[in-house]
Image (cartoon, rainbow, N blue to C red; front, side, top):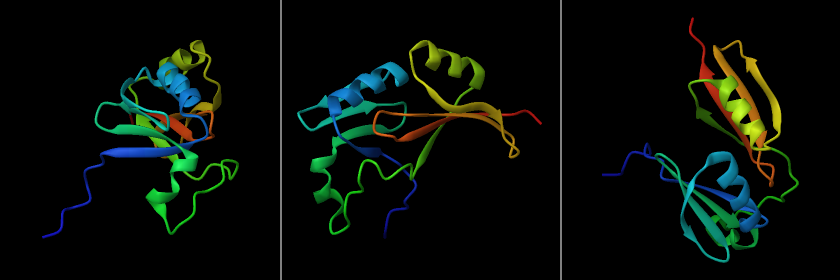
Length: 131
């Protein structure tokens, strides 16, 4: 019997420079490094691992598909639930993280703000609004 695909374990982002990315994620996410080598840095988040893998090492993971160019633009948005979007935005700004937008009240009942890492991966913080 096949396993249900409902238990996310690792998100792997293809990055140009894992050490540069490590600096950003340590600052913005206050994550803890659980593995590091010359080509990757893995952070342990609450319920998932975040693997920052050197782009040149990514092909074998997705072949025969190709690895997208680093300047292709945003193609994904990762959302993190927070209790207070405004306070989280201020904390990010205090750390030197530049917001792309927000915080904004969205028509679907969520207050959001977005920021990007050095490789252009877009992250969103989201606070459910009380109706």
